[in-house]
Length: 293
Figure 1 (cartoon, one colour):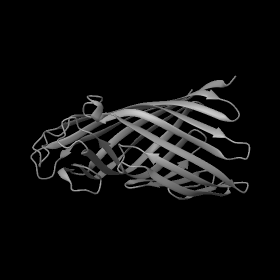
Figure 2: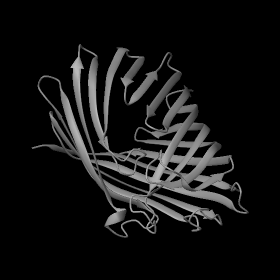
Figure 3: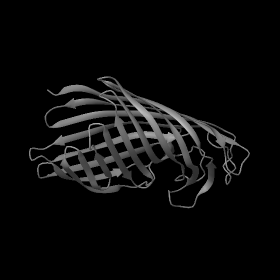
Figure 4: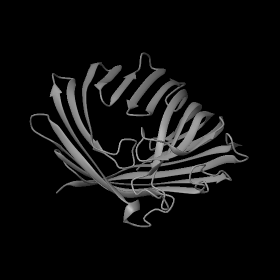
């Protein structure tokens, strides 16, 4: 009989103080919270079945108006989802897996079937030599920038314990030249970039600087066009401290500057933008707690 184990619990909170909205006599501020966890339902030498769940909330304080429709800017946004992930390792070293999730990302989540979505992903890892591998992926998330299945091919190159790179899509690189320094970078289409440099003072404390370009996508319940979605973008420069409180817990405090902040409604990320709202740059503070249980 398989063994049951549990996995990580993650909670984070962020605060963007109120800043002016370009072209309007209005300000915009946000408090966001994110909660997610993963639980292993079944694990043995070849198979693993995991349950995932998460919920995000964005509380927005603003008097801004979306200029084309004349509607008030959303004051609250949610993203809630549950899912299952399965992975199998074959005798020849190949690893295959996939997952499915169900959820809703909206100002009124689960208000109707039109505010619900199903996401899916699949992966196949084929070893090449002792350390390297080809990785084939297929990802579909209706609440991503690209709302159709995205195929990915990457070569996982591991020339040493200090260096790892996924060459292809998704792109990822990790470099640890010394015991103190760790560099990471990641890219996913279209506007997902993460770059981070971390310095370790010891086993329990580290400081870091990071740059992120990210997006969030929602379906507003009162949208006129059914396939129209609400896009939010920003870029962030961050500094922070990360501390291991125990073997099973890590806490992070951070702050920085957010810029290139805007939102709009459109049927896709590259279609005609409606209701575009630009927010002035400004500071933010955030905290995160990860518990491995």
